[in-house]
Image 1 (cartoon, one colour):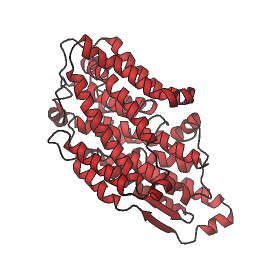
Image 2 (spheres, rainbow, N blue to C red):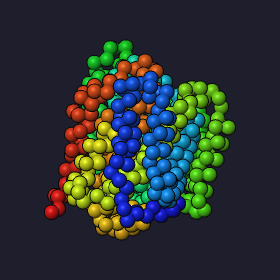
Image 3 (tube, one colour):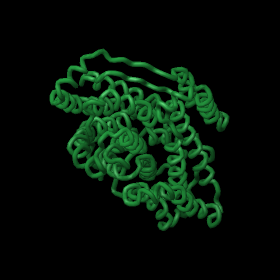
Image 4 (tube, helix red, strand yellow):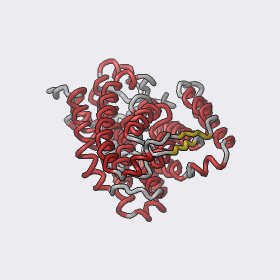
Length: 432
């Protein structure tokens, strides 16, 4: 629930104020590959400097602190949510012994696709990627990591605001908690089942090509063992707190308390076994500080100039949101096109949600599904993608490079599924 209403001024922000937002997204997209050492050491400064340009305009030039206070409140809510889930998931350790057969891998990914909606794609990715690598260690290949990213880190998290960062930002804007489950479960089911089917075919072929000792080892009994299961209690606290709206910051306080309790009560060997560090959360915190600050004028500008973008139908919003979500971070892309849809409807993003839900539910579903699904098109589409690749690299698992990921897997396997999702669920023609 908004901390303060974000009222559009009679004069929209100047066009040049979009530059910090564009620079922030391009830095996230390009610098980790073009200048990895610089990015690793300097990404907090990128966030601070670019964010200060946008915030400074409202505080010192326009003398209107309301948009900045509003963005700060949503930033805190977002970060506490992501961080608490990350900490609690890091306290649960899953040990898998044995070599998985294709049907076991299929079952694992199917269950993970449900779990992602309960602990988020970030939490599920961090919790399950290491067991996934261990259970396939004798025949693991690129596609094992890529399809894990497709499903667990992205597509599967489309049913709840907890599932994926874009949907939680929508929840903060007033979208009811169960709205995405009610309106997006059909494209979610189709996308998940289609990707699971493609994966199963590839895995069966890989299994039959494996050396005989590997196939014989796969017939041995699987052993599963869990550590830190008491953290399920803290996970329940976080999930329950999502529904708390008053007083201000009580929800975030409960989440933070659950994370602190998890950290204090989890044995050190569990964290060591999970190779748990707060590094990923620190990086997310800095990056989204810059994103939340720089997107204030971008969202206002899009609301005012929405009509000039030529977007009308669910199909238009599905592909426009998706194409940018694949090459930029999908969370700010979701908000950008949500603001555009509100602008076309003549509604304010902070106050017009009930009216928008009543008359434009199809567009909201298209934007939501597209932002979540297309985040899997590249490593930079969603935060967990990077994390999974980094963990796999440290485990000496071969992973495709940026262009290999796109050309060998995303375009031939993922894009056709996304095209079918658009045709089946969001293919209404453009309106004049």
